[in-house]
Length: 306
View 1 (spheres, one colour):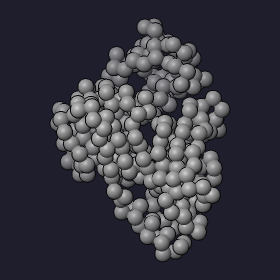
View 2 (cartoon, rainbow, N blue to C red):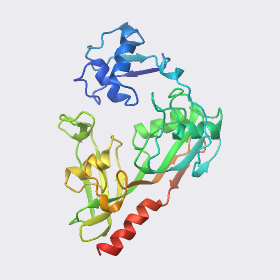
View 3 (tube, rainbow, N blue to C red):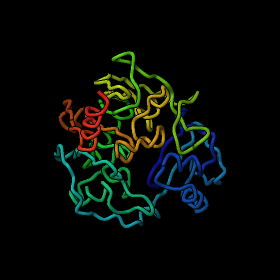
View 4 (tube, helix red, strand yellow):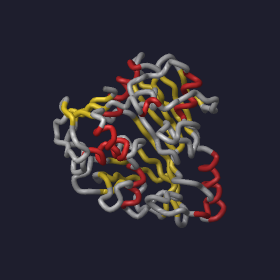
């Protein structure tokens, strides 16, 4: 089996097994997991299950991704904006609209294709052949700092830092509206949207989600914010800001398209990432400057909304 994990109270276990797994591993479809269960490639507590099985807290799930990994994931000569590199980690400034890792039907042009070409065989294998070296992800439309692990030793240590929320993560975004306070915190639980399962939302019983915000600059109808993640939930910043009716500009999932900015997808940039280095045990911080699309949006605000 390629992956084993235990179901805890952090998971929403209301869905049947094939749906539950397609939400945890969003790069695979529900039908993929239905077939995998029927092929006995997914076991619960070392026993076969049906796709309709409902997981229980304490269940140990074993997943064989071998068929998925027959996908030919090859290295490609893709430009990587490298911020830092040593024998253990590679840190890049991810471009906007760049997909992090391949999925069935989308096996080319991703960050993984680029790092396979750059690092050759020096990538951790913990997440399998489709996600080598990938210890965390940022959305396709989000730009900024992305860390890759070059061996299993570093992957295990840094993965634990993410799980324990000891990684420092700072983002910059542009939102609709203004704010009364220069500094504020949103502490509201996040889970799957009950009306649209492809989205996240503020839900009772969701997982704890805490974001600290600092107002950098305010315009007539817009604001620039610094966002520090205290937890790492899916779409956390986007959901938190949408919940107070201050969505990020150009976020066509939690806000609107905002054609005047000519930006495809949310204006959100992962500016800083800080970790304890797995080899030296010293704190190290990486920063990615604001990309051109983001700076263009600021220039537009300066010229039209001061």
